[in-house]
Image 1 (tube, one colour):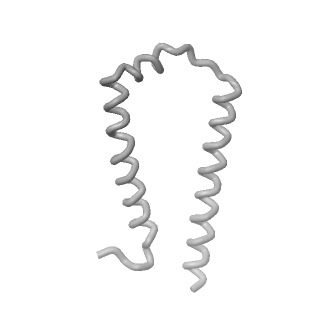
Image 2 (tube, rainbow, N blue to C red):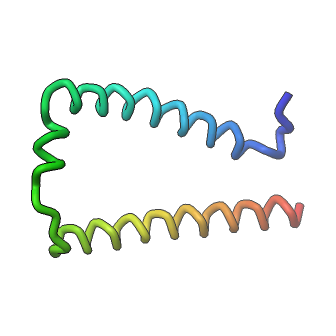
Length: 78
């Protein structure tokens, strides 16, 4: 049984299950419908959208890391 102090393992498992449930069928659909071929053929460029998307991703990951660190410190101090 999972310890009550390790709630983040439950959250991680739930997030992983959600990602697999949503992304696996989407990837399979993209392959069968030909959408994946369109993406592969598109000339990749390092444009404004790519840079903005990368920065947004880094900000989201940073926020998640900060929240996890703060929660772990709070759990440690109890």
